[in-house]
Amino acid sequence: MLTPSERRRAKVAVLLAVNAVPLVGVLALDWSLVALLAVYWVELGACLVGAAVKALFAEGKPTYEANGFSWLVFGALSEKRGRISLPVLPLSIQVANLPAIMMTLAVGSVGWALFGAIGVGGVGETTGATMTDAESLSVGLGVLAVIFGRAVDVGRYLLGGTHASVPPQQPLRSALTSMAGTGSALLIGGGFVISGAPPPFVLAFVLAVKLLADIVDVYRDRLEAFDERTSVELGFAPDTPEWERIESSRDGSEIVRPKPSAVVVGGVVRGLSSPLSVLLVAALTLLGLLSTATTPGVAVELLGGAVVVAGAFTALGVFDWSFRYLAMEYRVDDADDADADPGRVVGYDRLFGPQWRLASESRAELERVRSVTDRLFGTETLRLERDDRVYRLPHLSSDAVALAPLRSSHQLTNGRSGASSATNSETNSVAGDS
Image (cartoon, rainbow, N blue to C red):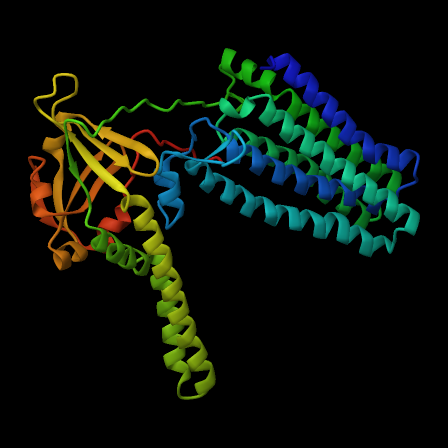
């Protein structure tokens, strides 16, 4: 395991090599401004992809709030505690990391495309400069060198074991910071060229801003340490919560499981009742009906689009609800087991392991709710809201519901209970700064 100083020196060496490529291109190979910006633009993309790979295998607990990802699919992933092991490599993918990665890739891709369009495309169109064959070849080699440097950085991160102790947001935040610095250089540099600034000035500006952004990234750990020691709150201090250990055994426990068919139907209702689904389907249907009198062909297309949208959200809802609950079982400790908390309830996923636990006294606070799906299948749902989290034991048989003394009984529609978006993990707290 490398020390922080050794990791910093290794990262400095990699970044110096990466930054030397465009510098050598400008000084020795007579690269144009467009060529330099193109290499930096590709490096931005490589940085984003490399950060996504780092976050994918990060084993630290995510630091965003699961309630912030209560949407379809995103919520199901962010609330699930567990890992998927790779068959060959000694690495695993933490399911709860995926929402932050997908959001970062979505936002970063938009920024990357914008930086390329203005910083590279705008400069090329303004100057009318084109790369010669020799310059194109050297730029291609520079791009390969930049990608290789980023790959070395990812390999060092994995082989050095850094991934075992960091949350997924750490590499993603670092990549977005680097993209913000280099991207700003591309945008402002492109703006300078479009406004008529001399190319040497723009070259110097881009190189200086890029180098400054890399230096800030390298010495982030020292900034974090300074932030922790002072009350200045620069925003660099890391938030690194740890997973709570949850032990559970089937021995001596009463096992309760949701009704599978009710879970699937509940997913259909959840998907169709999603606000975005209702809005899109209603808008397409209304436009289609209004178009029937004038343009029948368009009306058919709009109504067909409404059906497709409804089908897509139905599939997403079924995946969401099934991923949350289909493999879940709820283990109630035997009151005669002296080694356990009598009456404690542990939510256990048969694929990913224990998810959350409720102390025995919490059972008295469970509420019985009946959704449309519950009334259809003769099941009931137990629900508990505590500390801004919602625990849900959905679609249980009447005999299974008897596992808890219930505080109250009232009716809820499935759409309303779905909007509560059950947080399926007491320990899966995640941050919205991805």
